[in-house]
Image 1 (cartoon, one colour):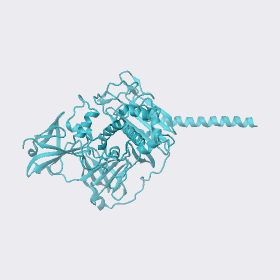
Image 2 (image 1 turned 120 degrees about the horizontal axis):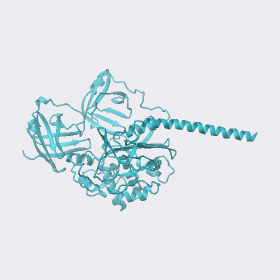
Image 3 (image 1 turned 90 degrees about the vertical axis):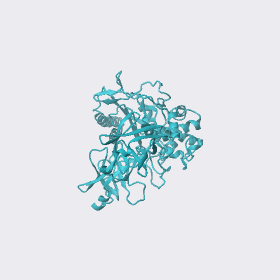
Length: 551
């Protein structure tokens, strides 16, 4: 009888295991179908799903190298781009754990070359992008940097940062995502530890965590075995972008699916000796006005369908990446693509959805406040991003409030979730909050899952009242060491500067123009005569002064 019972149990267990395996295979087939649009001989993707500390599923499709027809595999090395930031943050965390620095230290304690901007910029302000430092990528664009024939390094970017005479905001006032912060963090790591950051990270993080194929790139000439090459599409043809840049801290780490699975466990295994780093990286500060931040120290900490997530994406020439961790569910998804055509962020959440149980999202299908039509009317009008020319029109169609950016094609319907608070109907992670009581330094705040953009309500100038010839001339910026030439052609104002021979300027508010790429020109007058202008761009650079060379 006992023998018969054992046989029954044995076969029952086998049957259940078979059923579970079949269910898992069906689930994994859904992942396969998500990526069926990728051709086998095209650039592709590599994915890892981690559960309870184990890589339970890995999927690859497409080519890591088109020239030699090398497909992706689990050992393929790819660039993390901005996912690197959490690793640079971890380096700072290790140093603080060793008592070698404190995140409340003034940055100038370690980098005295940084100008004194009157308010103390602390290490924590670099970590959470509230320092107010201008974004070096935008500064390079405004210089007319020749990316096709020139590159930049940490040293050249440091020199550029140190030459800036102003900042965007008081430290701790607002989040303005800027890679400059993490270039300086890398410099702090090197000066405090006495080692290059690639050596420090290998000894203190990668080796102890068993991440054998993860590294900070140490040069452009470095041989990287089994690497994925990046691609973009021009017409029907794939091409490979070339870069002469080697700058690490904000980016610059290479890794694999297997290694990133190990890294994700940092946020999910509280028994690890590195659990203190999880707490360090995910620490959320409050802004000066008391508002809770969603950006921590190299990662976003934000809700998704009722779950707490730790996430960050990365993008660079011809590549995209994404890491999402759900610490309470001990679940993570890592995705890398070597094609600009593939939306890694969107697809990573599609994969994540397959492993989540339905759970009530507290932001969904609940109206906490119903606005009257008169209240909605007060919110309508033209808005413009602060320190940018990005426009946002708020309008009402069919009693529904809608938003249309200057880059958008159609107005997007918004759903109310509180007084003057809305989110997109089709994307709950994008929120809109209006401020019309003068208690905020902006009129509209748009929150893209923790990355915030700030807008002001504007009154656009009547073109018939503007004499474009007033703005013609040559203007020079000492901070950027560049000259802009403004001229009129066919009743349109244009700007010429290095590698930008003819940029069209579009009228905004009085004595303001925009170049339709998130750059705004504010012209200054001495009585009636134009004497110069200042530039703001992409929300992360402002007050770059250009003076007219001939008055």
